[in-house]
Length: 83
Image (cartoon, rainbow, N blue to C red; front, top):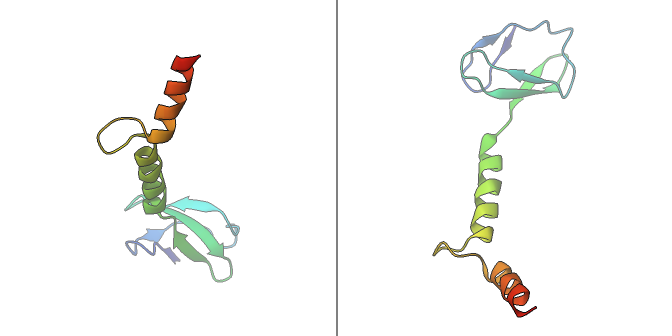
């Protein structure tokens, strides 16, 4: 029997048929889980927090705090205007 490391729900999977690196989804909490080990099967929660943080950093670098483009992009627009 495999349990979700996030919510401890039982996950109906044949332990002999899972492969290392396989992605499973918890039917209860819908967390994405990666099989990190077989025999015995060990699952790791794939963190969405990292993806969210990376997206926020990218968005912040593109648009400044005041809603304008960053200095780098502003320079590109100025150069285009001069041509």
